[in-house]
Length: 589
Ligand code: ARG
Image (cartoon, rainbow, N blue to C red; front, top):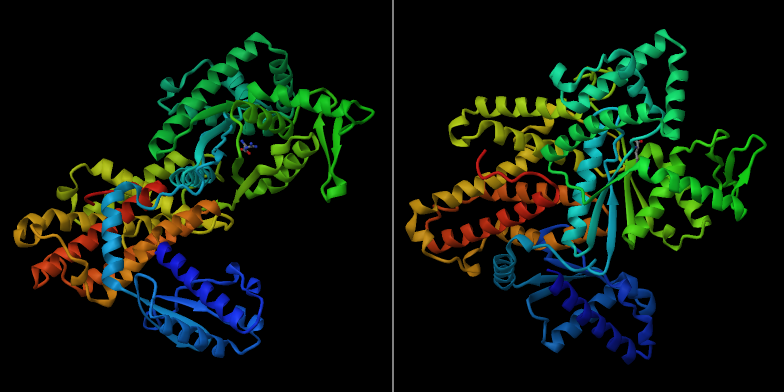
């Protein structure tokens, strides 16, 4: 579609410039960026529309007069660009009708040759983009918020890669600090050397249990906090006993967390550990102090003053020399750039931390790092469950593994009620994939900045704006393709674009041709929701078509073959799009 739009644009631009010249106006006044090619609101109006009012002023005439003039020119030239059948003038608009079989033929051919790569491009081919996401703390397992984070990070990374960028996904494991010491303290005092195996718990859940126990302990015993602080100081001093305990518990936490990543199809190219980079931040702060970028208070603490840019004063090193969250982030960013110089680094982190990232980016800029202007905070809203659903052990946070289990159970129920266990075969595997499809779609469909309420039941519905509905559309086409053996007269034919004559087919062709542009838009705006909504549109349009027209059993086998061909194109687009959103594809469900 992009080709036609571009050709058309050039043609109209040329006509406008010639017209201007003839009228003694400066053709330089005709600017390409004022020319847009739009989709008309109703299909009867045409396939593409060019509004001419942005040029009316230059020509000093009403837009309607200008559009008629352009129309006359197009007519006279008698050389409509390739693929364009005819046009009409409606008010200030030039409406274009494309040659349906030519466009359809092109789509068939392109999807056939590109297959799994259809929709990919090289728009970002010179870019090295680092995407940081997930970044859990090692005192507890992943929760619902991480699932949204992971869904976004993984999808953005896949979309950027598909658009040609060299992408490196990284996970920053926050493995040090007072919160980590809290679960360690509870374990030391209440754990009696037990292991996750002893208690039959997934290892990160085991660690999380002690974090909960710490909170209970701290309520009973006001000195617990001091003991945890003391442990942190010992940790910083490298106390062997504390370090040993720390290593053991971190191993448990990280092993468990990685199992959840495997389950959700999340991949990282590199893990960073806060414990390994936070000292680097400390050094930078001291250097900044020497250079006069930061200042020191009487108690020895080191600060930055960002009031001149509308932010606050912020402490970077406490008086006891311990560092803060932002301190380690300074070190982490610098280490990463050294390891892998990037053009852009995206931090996928909740909107609660908007202020933190403003501060961080400004500090790095002040320290003189050129690349600091290429740091981007991909901020996303909160995720909640509807009131009363699945409270976690702590009573507030919803555990990721528990939620996945629950969704899988519900998907199994759904398969059983539909009496599809036989067809599906692997009940557990299929239900797991449906659960992931439901979850990822639900989390990616709204724009990232919106807060959302995750409704498990709604997310799993096989109809409506859901992941399973999209999976189901794909599975339905697969089942149709399998049935092709039953109709050899259709199977042996290759479809011809000219056999497709219904409005629904043309609508589908145009929609499928938009896929590469959708991927591109999602890539440049770091926004998978555009793609999610697009896939829903494709599924809906196909379902309508499928209900209104026989495909395999169309009366004329040539028409049937062409319809199958079109359905295969839908399938390929759904598959490619689902991969980019990390929604598992299912042949049967
Ligand atoms: N672990 C942090 C938290 O749970 C998020 C880390 C985000 N990434 C970063 N570079 N600061 O709040």
